[in-house]
Length: 283
Image (cartoon, rainbow, N blue to C red; front, top):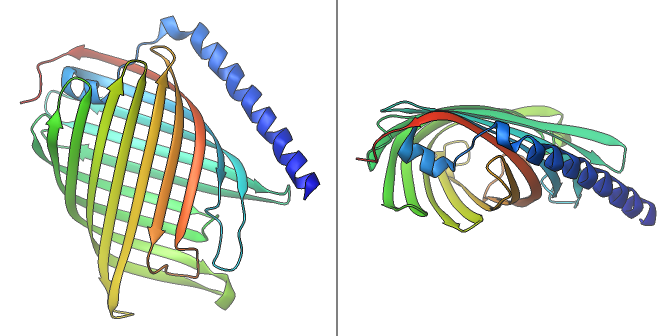
């Protein structure tokens, strides 16, 4: 146990120095790039914006019902958005690897694309598609597509509340090692979310809650999933942001014997850019 702790501390120190090095370089090049808060960009500007986020992760998302495992790893996330005068197009890619006691390396990744039509309106349609795999949770593949309505409940220059609701179709393939087989599940789901964003000085807070439910005829019962996402941002410059990210997930009836509740905590450095022009405010 002592050797594992020493290895973990050594890796954490390496990761910290690596992120610090990137942060210093980012500040040096800060004057060559321009960024703007995503919420303000969606209101004030047309054009292209993007982020590159590098995370150091500690989580238990590979845990099963019978055992607890804490993983150490790195994560890279890229966001790219384009705002026209009427519509918003967004793509997000995520890649991560995790190591357990220097014996096993596991990967997870997803790509998500969304479009918000007439996004400047307080009620606007949105559509999305996503592909994903997660070796930590024994998820071979998840594919989903859906759409719904987004509602801007309240908005001013530093505070926004939004919500959304819609329908999605999901395909999942899980590796059920205990029975040496792959379990496939196809469900039509209801999906709803609630989010708020608050900026104060050099800091920002974002909170999202997502709830999904569906009737599964195989078990003749409902399936429920709840996800919570909390981000605390510290703006170092127009280019560089420090991010603390906490993600929580609860699955009332896992498809295979995974833990019902999992969490992920990460500290990240985010680099941003934008290329756009001013436009009129939201309708």
